[in-house]
Image 1 (cartoon, helix red, strand yellow):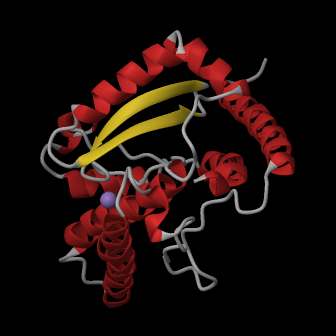
Image 2 (tube, rainbow, N blue to C red):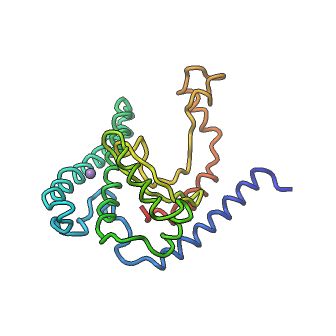
Image 3 (cartoon, rainbow, N blue to C red):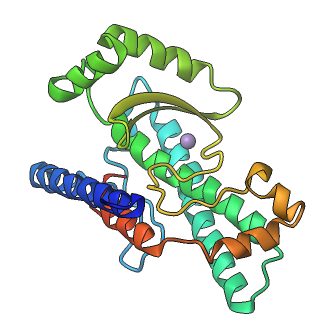
Length: 244
Ligand code: MN
């Protein structure tokens, strides 16, 4: 009889195989330029050129707005995301993590800004109309109809508190298309990340034994980590990494 651990490994391996097969199919159908370009050849974050001229969205969005938006909102986020990573590299080098919260929050905020802006430019580079084919079917399946989908997306996006985004996403674990709203850019994730290792630091996870000593609990957790499972999750995530 398979142990629970073996079962989990087999199940995960089968899942990874399915993902790999899907990714190969998707990749074969990709057109050049499909993939979001978030980094340069050195791995530093970089803003890809806009997929249109500043005045291409007139009269819906005026040229000056696009120019300011791209150069003074998107691009500075890219610079700041690189700065945050530099700050974290210095912290690791000097073993001084006094500012780790600042840099981690900064990285989540600025990188998410970079990612969402990059997708936004492509989202608004078309001519409107209505979705077709598989996308249209998925929308019907998940929302009832395109009209209902649009009504929810518009209402949700208008309802964002303060600054943020309306988001349509595909959740690979459930196969669902979802509408989300996002405050700021993150709270506190980088959109599209595929989790491969999770550490629970809710007090319910450790308080009986460790009380207020979260530090001790987190360090102790490392004696429990299943690195084979983490590696498997990474293997499964790799084929989809280019889709964000
Ligand atoms: Mn913006």
